Length: 339
Image (cartoon, rainbow, N blue to C red):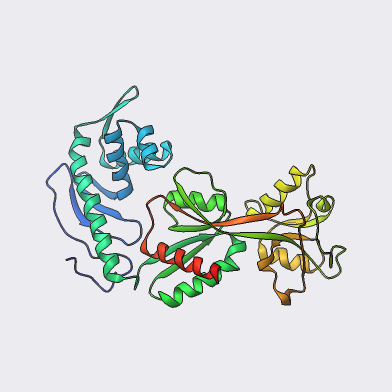
């Protein structure tokens, strides 16, 4: 059994020292609860080989091609190619011979393959053992969420999760859904709460709830007190608008254009707090989720009569790349939504 060092619980387990008689020597094996990285020292230099690079090498060798490997791993082909090239530069030797469409492992690639397979198997076993031992008493969770969700349901879920798993270090990144999904692909996030649909083959999504959008207005606004509003009523109506990349901005612009007009902005480039503050100040109206408008804000909300402005909140993760912490947070979020 791997001994635990209290200084690194939550970041990984201590190095397992072993020498490998090959073209290079592996010095340290670091099993991390987050992204797992192999640290090594080479006879010709030193650097770091990511476990993901070894997965790519194995897939290319077994599929005899970069395109086929990318399809199997559900990542983009350029990601596989650039990762393998980076590893070849680090090692100072070609791992594959490319002849037309056929790709075969070189002598160096063949020498690396058994160690790569063993490395992945050992790291997965180590990660599982540490995760089971910790039982979510430590570790990390890197979560992405759109800003409008962070202020509502995600905030409630984070509080509930922290109360149940206080040893898990939380990191939250706010951005638009497409940028969050790109961060998932890079491995910068474990999980993301996004607006669906997300059309990327390597992303697993789960719809959680449908949410109505409303028109937020100040007390003195002409729309205040109305029973409902149609999308057509937004034509020539000054809107307080979010910054580029915001899901709410894209949704509002798209539905207006579908109705045959371009929306008018009184001001743009804002985050949620700024949009609500300037809307309350009478600078214009804003299309927002009803959940972000509090009773004490002084804003009125008018529902859309045609149901055209609503959205689906969902969870996004990499296929087969969830962690105990991300699964636990997903359960917490579902419970919060259900309540």
